[in-house]
Image 1: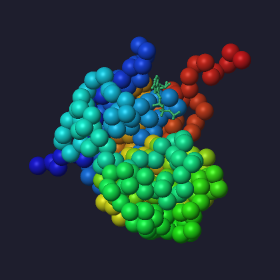
Image 2: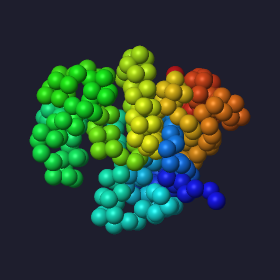
Image 3: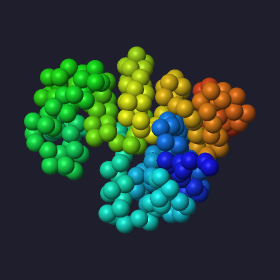
Length: 260
Ligand SMILES: Nc1ncnc2c1ncn2[C@@H]1O[C@H](COP(=O)(O)OP(=O)(O)OP(=O)(O)O)[C@@H](O)[C@H]1O
C-alpha cells in the first residue's frame, strides 16, 4: 500500500476580489521529502503556502496533513496543526525589538513554559549549529547582515524541531556564496530533523541544491511536477523557459513585448 502523503493539496482554489489565483492546485509531498515550488512572480506560490498554513482560507478543495483534512478546521485544530510547522517568511522575518535569542525561541517560550536560561541555551545551540557565533544571541536583528538574519530566521524555524518546514524564498537578496551556504544549512536541517520541506524559490541553482521534487505553478494549476533530475527535460515549454531563464517563450506576457 502507498504510504499516506505528509502533505496533500487537492483541487485547492482561491480567488481575491473576483480574480481567481488558484484554480485547482494538486500537490503531494511524502514524509521527509523536499519539494520546491517554482513559477513566475504573482502566480500564487505564497498564497498556496498560506492556504496550507491556514493563514488564508482556501475557497475549495482539500488540504490534508498526515491524511487529516484541515481545510475548514476550527481555530483550535488549526493552531495545533500550525505548531507542527516551522516557517521562514520572505520579508520581515525577525522582530526588530527583540534580541536574537528571543527571536529564535519565541515559539518555544510561548508554547512551553520555559525559563530564560533554558531558552538562551537553546538559542545558542541552534545558532551555533548554523555557523553563527554564540554571542550573537544578545545582538538585535539590525546589527546583523542580511545573510546572518537569514540564518537567525532559519534557527527560529527549526528551534522547536518541527515536522514540516516551509521556506518562502530563503536566499532572496543574498550573494550567491551566502545563498549556497543557506541552501546547505537548509538541506542539513531538513535531514537532521527528518522533516518534510516545501520551499518557494526563484533561484534555480538553489532549487537544484534543495529539492528532491519540483512543482511549477502556472495559470493557477501545477503544470509540471517531477524529480529535480527530470526538470531539464520536462517536455513542458513553460518549465523549460522558466528553468533556463529564457526571455522568449510561452511565459512572456504580450504586454512585455513591443508596444514601448
Ligand atoms: N491577501 C490578499 N488579498 C488580495 N490579493 C492577494 C492577497 N494575497 C495575494 N494576493 C494576490 O494573489 C496573487 C498571487 O500572490 P503570491 O504572493 O502568491 O505570488 P507569488 O507567486 O508568491 O509571487 P512572488 O514570486 O512575486 O512572491 C497576486 O496577484 C497577489 O496580488
